[in-house]
Length: 291
Image (cartoon, rainbow, N blue to C red):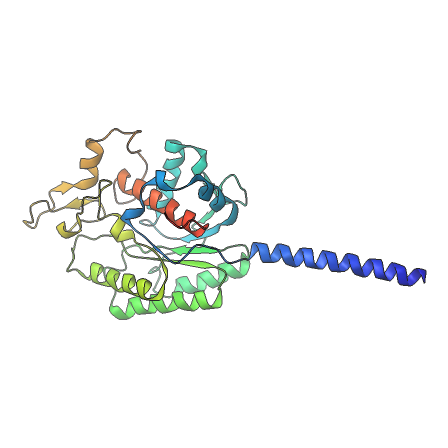
């Protein structure tokens, strides 16, 4: 009788531990609540983001970001933002509610480097070794400019395959950076291919090209053949004779309206805008409806 009583107590304790363990694992791997959406120039007003979702992002998200130089604009912008606006926007590669967990350069290369498919294997390897990750984001460097329709289809199909195999992880699509070829150039056409796919299939898109086609006042420069440095053709004579970011910076107060930070191949304001849009992305992934 005594043995049966002890066995019963042991069984109950074991069941409690088992269910607590299952509950904890389910909590860690639960799907993120953000809807499918597109982040673009309309999502660069940092003050619109409710603080509770910035806090939620720091608590819930475990992000890995693969990129090379152009993709670093998000990160250098986010780093400068901490000095500009404070530790609410702090990030670091660690599991802490005090900072947003981002493993920067967590996967080598970018979406086209060293080729157009290696990134997918790198993603699978990273997920296998990092079970807590629940957001995967990759950036292009200059490879969209030379991409064919088939190349972009390969990218989209590989992303879709990852989403199907890892339904509890959110995968963020991205367009390529401006290259000065304008609306008739291959870059814009291929980015339109990515946008259409994301719109038609309810994907999450960080629209890199769109963000750097507008200044913070919403003035559009995409029809003036802008490049990644924010240079553009102001009078449509075929020569890039102005720079929208420098113009805006010169007419606004540094450390009040914008902040200086490193911005690979570009101007600080471009990285500012990328950082604001990145926080919109994180907040949406943490459950904010964007309204």
